[in-house]
Image (cartoon, rainbow, N blue to C red; front, side, top):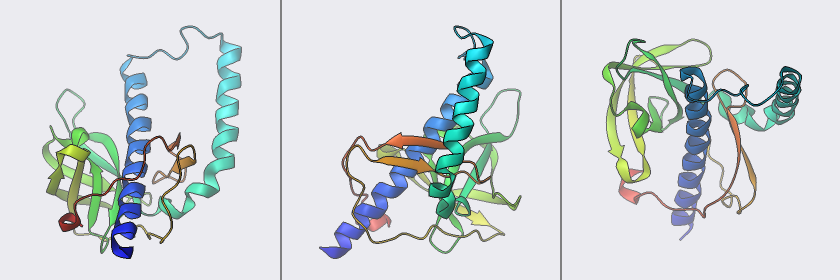
Length: 191
């Protein structure tokens, strides 16, 4: 019973972290690609005010993400197009420091080498070791580097309505979100 609860909590935290990171990454990609023009309906002085408030918010929540910064990496892949290899997702370092959990849908179309890059610039090749399509997760095996794995704590899963902060490798919180679904468990054999 305690093991199952602990695994559910760990699974929820990893899934929540990845969901927040993916959301921030997807919105950033849409803005860079021109799908979203954030300035289209906002006057320049209003946009500056929003930017200033965003900086203040992220400065205030930065301490909440610090435990995860060194266990978060960028995942680089060439998914086609003219841009070549680029950051497509974040990943969470798990296990002995040579495994990374990331979003499967972001790397599913990867061509060639997948790389992970830490906040300190450490870069390593990674290969897909496992895919969990129903949860949109992929487990990567890192070659030639060790990163700091995330330290899970034994605690209850955050309740509905609680705020979560997702870390990024560069010390800037990647995203803020609210718990909107109950904890769910990954299959015990994958752990």
